[in-house]
Amino acid sequence: MAITRGTGLMRAFALIRHGDYRQKKDTPSAHQPYPLTAKGEQQARDCALLLQKAASDLELGLSSVMHSSTLLRAWQTAEIIRRELAVDEGQLLQSDALTERCVGSAANLTIDEIEQLLEQDPRYPSPPENWKSRSDYCLPLPGAESLQQAGERVASYISQLADESADNSLTVIVGHGAALRHGASNLGILSESDVANLSMHHAQPVIIACTEAGWVHLAGQWKPRTSPREFTD
View (cartoon, rainbow, N blue to C red):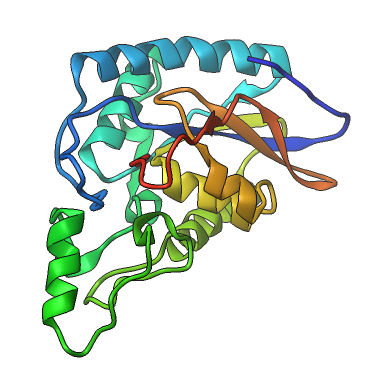
């Protein structure tokens, strides 16, 4: 993991996409309730070592409080990291603000099923091509949100943590690829084109920081996205 640090105080955050899990094929709902696979559990254990090294290299103190999405795969990833880092059990905080984009009443339906439902409903136009990966598109269904809206709530959560965190600290946040990327975009770390072309590796931290000069990317690699229909949550 390449490490770059400038001078001055910073409050850093390790953005971590959950580990590998069994995801339903061609299903854009990221609120699937499935647990980590054995591979995902090992990825989470390896992530704890990456975090310890990053904190040491950056000369930051690992925060005693961790944060995760309320979805099972994210919580499991965070729980494994918590145990490996010997963080107190009560110091892992879960929040719906860190979940992936919600597709509302279309939850856990396939892309084809969702598109067929919209075709059958005279109130709604057909969705645009590659609608699942479009940042601005929100399904016209109860409870649905766009990727941009998901990113806004993630960014708001991180910004509040930055106001409350100690100087020169590293706080762990476990969530989901698309929401974390769009959150980083809202913070000014990624451009719109970056968000469209990037994903996140499973359980490999991307470290960002709030510094005296603003938000910056400190360490860790984003994952190049191979397809506009690739599911990266």
